[in-house]
Structure formats: C-alpha cells, structure tokens
Image (cartoon, rainbow, N blue to C red; front, side):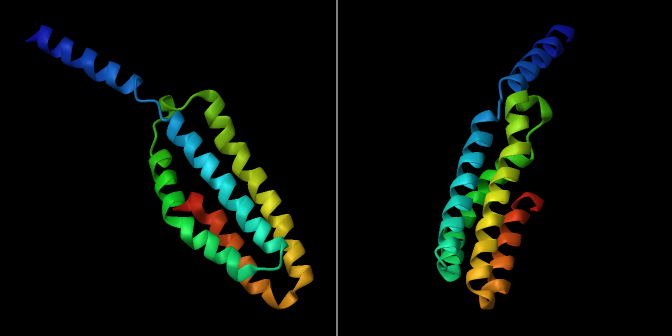
Length: 127
C-alpha cells in the first residue's frame, strides 16, 4: 500500500510541475496588447463606436484567455511571466488612456462612451 501511495504521489507531483501556464499567459498578454492598441487607434481616429465594436468582437476571446491564466497556481508561471503580467497590461492601459484623452479633447461629446470603454478594458482583470 505504501508503494502505491508513493507512486501516486510521485505521478501527481510530476503532473503539477509539468503544467506550466506561461504559454496561456503569453497568449493573453498578446491578445490584451492587440485589443488595447486597436481600440486606441480607433479612439485616436475619432471613432469611439468603431472602437467599441472592436472590443465587443474580441471580448469573449480576451476574457476566456484571462480565465485560463487567472486560476494558475504561482508555481505554474515563471518569474519572468509574472513580471510581464504585472507590467505589460499597465503600459497598455497608459497608452490607451492617452488615446482616450486625445479622443475626448477632439470630441467632448463622446466622453461618456470613451470612459466606459476604457473602464471596461481595465476591468478585464477583475472578472
């Protein structure tokens, strides 16, 4: 019985260490950067409705990728990936905020739409 327990424990521990989530995290980071860049470009072009359409068309994929990363155990992500998860989305949001500010200055009537969109993109991490 002890041998069986030891073997099962060994397989379980090997299985956990082999389940790296770096690829999933990298896919999410790439998708998030792409979405925020595309939305930012539309906002800078003065097209808040098109920016919303871009976000809505990619929202499901973005959220699915975040859910895959969100529940990763700390040991399933490399130190470099953890740093990237903390830094890259913040930089993406800084760039998006700059684009949003330009859009609001160019068309003050779209302020509510732009702010709602930026807030929704920021809240991807809270889901």
